[in-house]
Image 1 (cartoon, rainbow, N blue to C red):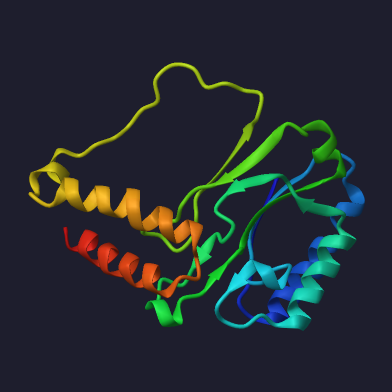
Image 2 (image 1 turned 90 degrees about the vertical axis):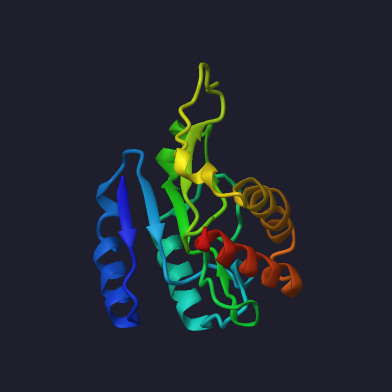
Length: 190
């Protein structure tokens, strides 16, 4: 498994990619790559903001050269948000879980799930075997202090049931983004 956190500067990023290009040629074992990228692979992976065509093409060439591709994913398409005001908001697919041919062949039943970002700018991701069934109870942590606020239940219900679901279904809707921003600020205040 290789974990990559891309550099912000193009020159440093290209140096990293050149260094990593030499590695796949020596690997004939299943190889999983987790990637926090700065660049998207395709224009549809960014909503708002600008995409740099040359950087996308270089990223595409690199991924093709290394013979890696995204493993099957579900959940959030856009895995990062700049958390700006709605008119300046940018959504991008910057987080990727990729595998080489050997990974895809041996672990074909594995999939990734990108969860909603919540208060963070990146979406958490899990990798699991689709055939595996989780049995038993899952742990849930709840801090009693949360429930002491009179507004707690209404705020949680509003944030998690209404605005987040609507925003995930309509990521470019400016009115929903504004509502989500206001509710998120109220939640921070609590």
